[in-house]
Image 1: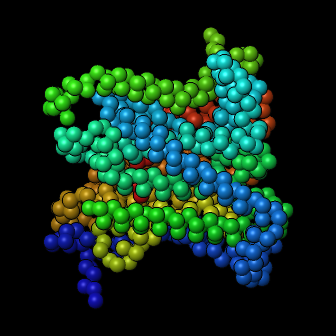
Image 2: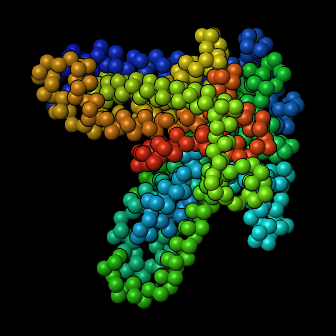
Image 3: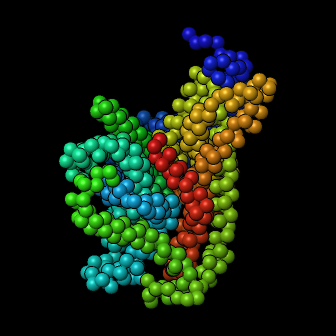
Length: 315
Length: 285
């Protein structure tokens, strides 16, 4: 069914090829490291969920017992749905903010004659800084006693907004969302910037000759052409929102203080696996990881597939 | 668009006002994006009592006392060296094994190599952190919990999908007749790879290494779980224990944040082009 592999390097229409034995040695180190430290643990993660664990020792086969525990026993019964709702809230707010503020900035920069790269670089800086640094930095910024944010609000006469932002369960989750947005904004700015640069100028010109104003041009010509970038930003924003760990950890500790108001699934996972007294922590946390994996991977693949098909239909 | 000056003239005035407003908003957002980072840097050069009396001020001459204290007393020298060791070694390992593998993947047409490539690339989509419990057990079995080599190997493995993804694309772009001369000369596969191909893909190798540096340097989850004793901590975990310990010394806290961020800022100043290119390459995965 397949042509015999070339036995040595040879040149013909196909160009230079590697023999099978040579390629084997070239890929071997990468295969070993990736196989042992990523692939093998990845597969094991699924099997872990179906056993009962006693600390680090594997016990009897447990079927879907660990999954049932997640939804029927405290504290998991309360923590998991609440954390999940926070992840979804972060994702939803991210979608809105990145596709309005982020896209708006990218569009404004795109129309700028000078300084585009300068602003892009500036806006991308928070994204390069470690999430743990960003989180701790904002706890200081928002401190109710000495924080510069509240001091600034007092200076401009908005004393009544000088609140203990991170201390109040009603505001803490919104602080988390805004800090995430602040950190990630460079992401859509860069990606939408690149996508806007790829929109042929003559298309916009043609539309303006036809009498389309700036807004019409944007929604009828530009936006449909940058939809692939919107897909990418959405899917990666989804993965980022579902996996957020370091930033919520720095803002609210491993328990999502105050009162679990900034709790997210990765923190629940971390607590169950490494901080809970439950000797079956490994089994229960692996069940949670399995569900999360299916949800993140499934939703991303599904969303990418649907969007790609839509794009293909359009062209 | 500039050719159509007759059309443009009619809307010249509101457009100019609009541009002015847009520029104002862009500058305003620059302050929002940069403000907290500036306060962090400025705060690290002040004293805590000065920060408490006026959070937004600045004194001259600046004080480097907090850096000295963070470096010595708060063990940032240890965390910093661990971070350098872990980041540099794992970027070196993942980049070297990825260059080797990417060359074979780009130059071989065997079916097994296509499957292997797909396997590596699937790693771009997998939420690898979710395998942290089995990784913990695996390293436990190798007696590598609380050891820097264990952490380095995990990061090296995690860097392979992205590095292979970028490098394979790069190798495929190179015309194959470049190698043909050396084939005719009878050079071995490795020699061809090393003296012909590697020099040609050097820019891609640099970009991959620089871009992998950022997430490894910043990572918090793996060292939090895989390291135990504070003399093995990397900066992000060291920072977490430090924030619990010195809650009230803001100047010192700012200095710790600056030390953790400094190498990234230096990297960014030296190679901002590669860093930003890597960022968009990683996003387009």
